[in-house]
View 1 (tube, rainbow, N blue to C red):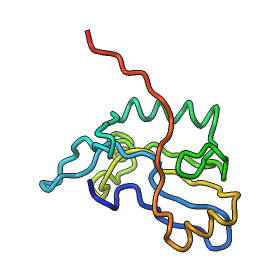
View 2: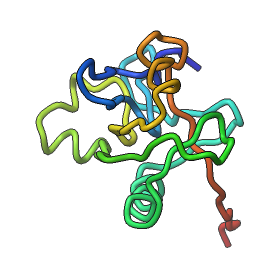
View 3: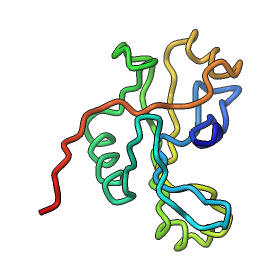
View 4: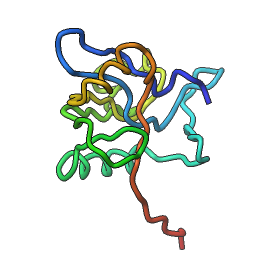
Length: 136
């Protein structure tokens, strides 16, 4: 795993917003081809599954916490799926290094926001549950 895949892209200076990748589905390999991304739990999430899950999250939840402590520190206010198909339709597929979901998080906890701005917090981690069905 590369240490830049889910890094924070930008923390707004004047607003309590942090931007980055909320989920990563595919990354480019050494030949420049997209391959499935496997996270630190050795799980990989297809683009269509990720897009559907984020759609539900944005409709029903959107709260963020720190290190899965379940204490809200903000919420996702922007989420844009960036699949290969979407990137191609925007004309940016060739410059994209990964696919997944790009997010903007409004951080309501000043201490947490300070940690993003200082670089102590460098990324997002997905919490949640899933049901895996064996293919028949």
